[in-house]
Image (cartoon, rainbow, N blue to C red; front, side, top):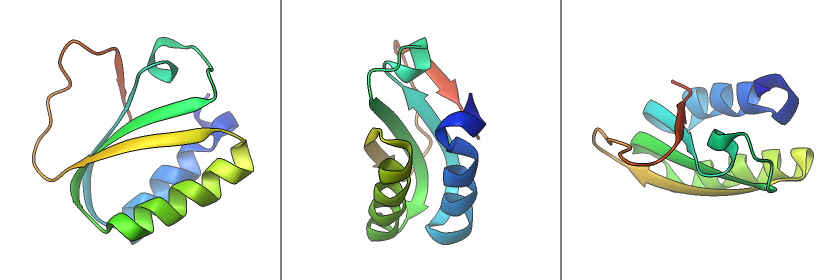
Length: 87
């Protein structure tokens, strides 16, 4: 699944370019296996917001899906949400 929707490239780009990325979670529909066209991400770390937005926009156009995301700079516990931890 990760190769199909470009998560591998996205995570690689995020790790290299946006700062100190510690964890990435997919939550919501995609984490439940439902392709609603929107991918919800929770990013944990000290990140460059503008670069995150630019990378997500580029990947979004290529895979024809919309990203919604939250950035947390400290450890984030995803509680009571279906989740898929990528890193």
